[in-house]
Image 1 (spheres, one colour):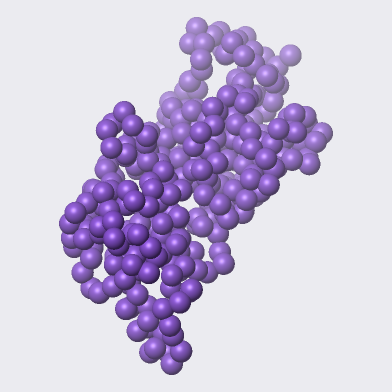
Image 2 (image 1 turned 90 degrees about the horizontal axis):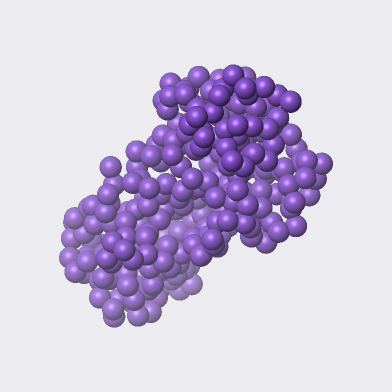
Length: 308
């Protein structure tokens, strides 16, 4: 299990063996017979490298301190892109992408999403496996269901997309009580619409699955453009989600039936979401891993849970 930044990155001094990134990059281009210069293309790697750290709450000037003295980085190395690209090593670039879950091809400059695709449409068993992996990999996991302010969660409205993002704690920056460092997992290649019954039931089933594993899924709001960018994978979630209060709405209000919780927003569809989960084979898998349904009101009379 990855527990600390230093453990994740390994023995930093070993990561910097094998020559600088810029030399390797130029050599590859020369071997292909391409005209090369240390210009915008390669400097863009340095800019995106810094962007990864900033998107996770680590300022440019903090990178040397985070990586440690054995990495060989100093403030002069990160003072400007030209210095940074000569100090970078292939291994540390790859490890950075691994730690934060970023595609190496994106860092290299390809026009692709920042993160690998995570697609669970009609695949609740796959989503359960994903949650299990998150719990194994991270000491703390949180989830977000994100709608835009105009979306009033009406069942006949499909104009507004909804995004789902998870994050796992990597470590704390500095003292344990200071700001945490998270790795983000935006779900991609799909839009959820509250007005479309199947995706609404699937979304509720996913919130229920997360609940069963002890993961809180908070409801928050962002402008529609930000939601679309999150789903498309063109932005980092951290700067958008890091300072939200997560209480714009409560997704768990929609996953419990009468008598199970003090706040039940839709008794009938809470039961329908479970039926959906059963039909797609996810309920048996979920119960086998987490036990019977965990509800807020542990004294609930399950015999009374009949659809009204």
